Amino acid sequence: MRRTTIFRSRGAVAAAAALVLGAAAVQAQDNPSVQSAAQLPEVHVVQTGETLWALSERYLGDPFLWPEIDRINTDVVEDPHWIFPGEELRLLQARAVIDSVTVVDELPVEEPLEVEELEPPPVAPAPPPTETAPTVFQESGPSVRTMDLSAPIFRYRPLRRGQFYSAGFLTEGEELPWAKVLGAVGTPTLRNLASSSVATVFDEVEIEAPESATYQIGDSLLVARVFRDVRGWGKVVSPTGIVRVTGTAGSVVHAEVIVQFHRVADGQFALPLEPFRNPGDVVPVPIENGATGEIVDVRDLHPVRQQQDIVFIDLGRSDGVSLGDVFEVFLAPEEGQVLGGEEPVGVLHIVHVRDRSASGFVINVMELGLDRGAPVRLVRKMPG
Image (spheres, rainbow, N blue to C red):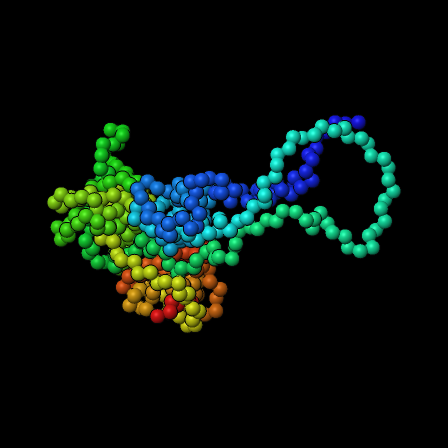
């Protein structure tokens, strides 16, 4: 004979599972500060210091529901870890999804009952059923309605703003109006490192404008490293961040770092931000006998090309290349042969275009060979 603890309610296990599924809705309903869909503002304008975590706790009652706000605002939020003052985030759809969750009625809490467990007497095996009997999963009980998952989770876009600005490009020998980054504003924490300074998001940097340029408060600038000459193509530009001018004093301005791609530091250069023209939701269509060219150089000198690397090709705006176009990369043909039906070794997505060259984002690598001189061919073209 053993002593064990049981519960009076037969539906305790099923109810516990239902309560787990509806936990988010329970928390939102029990929290009087959480606003329903009818009370929720349609749009929230981001203020300095706010995060998706905090907005989710404020409006949805649970900070762990922040991906729901991010999911319906992918056209505004490039990176869910960074939202910026002035951005407008839609909220009603997220609230409606949470409100659509129905949870089981709360069960009364009962004290466990101590009973004595007796050894059951032996019984003969039951005869096989003559008809289908209902299982415990068909037993009537509280109903649970889960979240509506019919809404699209991913919104396709041929090009994102962050990809366009972070890709980098070749100067093509053009003299661009570069400003010089003098360093981060403020006293360095370690005095022995005063010869070099680094700025992160929301820090300010000092920038000396070139003689031919005048910056105004609110202007946006691309900060980049400019290095390595590529014969016949100028220098390689590798962006490190985006800053916005906050104050001016002659040729020297202060600017706040609002987006960071890499290390923003003194000795780098700045350039007025190029406008980003969103191509919308159109999809590049397959084509045959597309334009052919080759890889001129790579932005970062890795021993082996990998996904998300940037390579530069010798086709640009003058050759009809557009943002969002897709190229395949092939191994260089043997002497006397032409590019034919070979299998590609990689795929490039065009994320920045200049007059004679374009920057390709590596979206697939099948084999080694994505390097200087490798031939490329246009296989998908953006409409228009």
